Amino acid sequence: MIKIKVAIISDIHGNSVALKEIIKDAEKNKVNEYIFLGDQINDFPFGNETLEIVRKYSDKVLKGNKEQYLIEYDEEKYDWDNIQFKNTIFMYNELTKDNFEYIKKLPHFMKLEYDGVKLLIAHGSPESVEEQLYKERTDLLDKYTKNLEEDALIFGHTHEKIWHENINNKLVMNCGCSGVSPYYVGQAEYVILEINNGKISDIDSRLVKFDIDEIKKKILNSGILLEDKVFMNLTYGGISGHSEMRFKFLHEARDIMLQKNGKLYRDNAKGIYKYFKLYDDDIWLGLAEKYKSEFVF
Image (cartoon, rainbow, N blue to C red):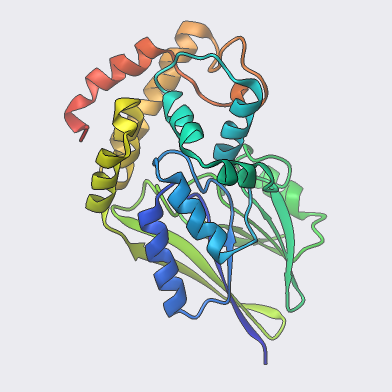
């Protein structure tokens, strides 16, 4: 009898503190393999530390939209004096050359096989790191499974809670959000997929506690607050009990930007940056003033 336990981890977003606790939990549960579904970095400023852990534990690693933002910034060298964008520029400047070359080579999807069980893994969808496969998007889920050769389609990106369904006789699974889930305070989610004797025998949705105060200290020591306080307050707020504030802030920013400009991107945007919701500074700072009572930094 062959039993394989695979830890599937998505959307860490630089939360190395949470990732360390996930690894501890996975080791206690005798995990054999690790899969990382993208967005390993960007948001929290601990990208190098996060990638060191990822690279140590797996070669089954995907690129997410957050990695793609950095790659396209390197290619285009956007001259955008924009407060919100400084979080991305900070990470671009912080990454070691070796780590940057590493993320450039990551695929956006991968086909894997464990004891005859075939998996298609992606960050957003098999076609794009940006496409969002929400649970209610039955049209897209049907599209990607009706002719699927593999036994399972596995992805992240949407930051929904972990869910899985059988669609067109295929397992479809969203592995949630490990680093910045809006649904939990100081808890990281990931999946342990058990393959037993050539079949998927168990899907274990895991919740692991991590120390948000440690993250706060690391943020204060990172230098990011000299570049960008607003986004860091939104990101930290999302894991420390203020996810509703973060949701309202970003949705208001979106609505104001659309009213003001009719679009969510700049005229000189290219590639994925047409989907990167880069709001004008007056919108960003105006909402920061409105929500400052809920900010930590």
